[in-house]
Image (cartoon, rainbow, N blue to C red):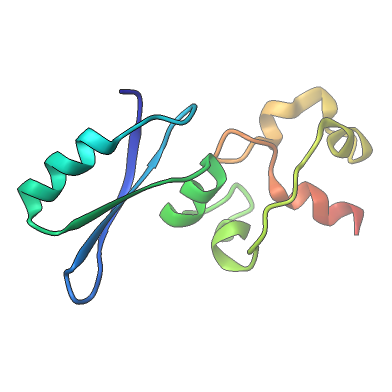
Length: 113
């Protein structure tokens, strides 16, 4: 089972426990959910999230010194392509423009607007 646990959240009434995780592909966690439900004596929901969603959930400071754009105002993630990086003249130093999620920084798309 290849998964990275990101966060755990109990519903206010404690009737459901959410496990947020990232994983390369889809994995069947039904057996794990059953074991967790027996252990915690509540309903379990396992929710897979993408790496950008993980960065949004964890939060942090970007290299510009501000909070991550995804934690403050981005609700829907746009696909940031290498074409966008080339239009911003950053194609030669892609690693410098990679965010905490490992993908190109979302702010590169703002330069084009």
